[in-house]
Image 1 (cartoon, rainbow, N blue to C red):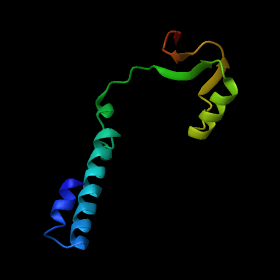
Image 2 (cartoon, helix red, strand yellow; image 1 turned 180 degrees about the vertical axis):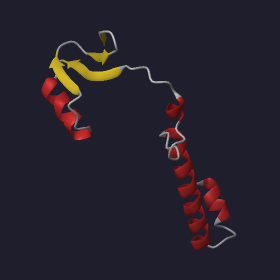
Image 3 (spheres, rainbow, N blue to C red; image 1 turned 135 degrees about the vertical axis):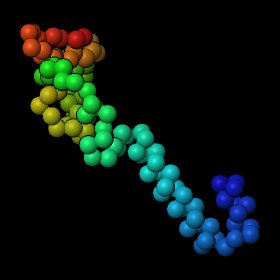
Image 4 (cartoon, rainbow, N blue to C red; image 1 turned 135 degrees about the horizontal axis):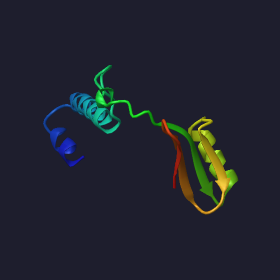
Amino acid sequence: MYCLSQVMKTISAGYTYATFGGLCIIATTIIGILRFNQWPKNLHPSKNLTNSNVTLNKISLFHPEVNNTKKIRNNLIQSDLIDIFEGLPKLEFHRKTKNDRIVIE
């Protein structure tokens, strides 16, 4: 903001705000691409990985406040993959390989 106020002493406010707004849009776009892995179509690095034949079947979430946790989950994501149970806080990932099922706690 200090730099913006210094620039406004010599350049008109409209031009300064337009330039500042443009720079903010460009910076937001670049940060969004880098932070959220927005890759162009067919260029994502995961396309080059070999198939591991492991699938994620279910995520079990344990929490003492089941109802509040379910409300939060329902506001964020609608998925049959996530089950919420009462208990001490922990996560379980249920995966399946070619040979057997694996639970990671």
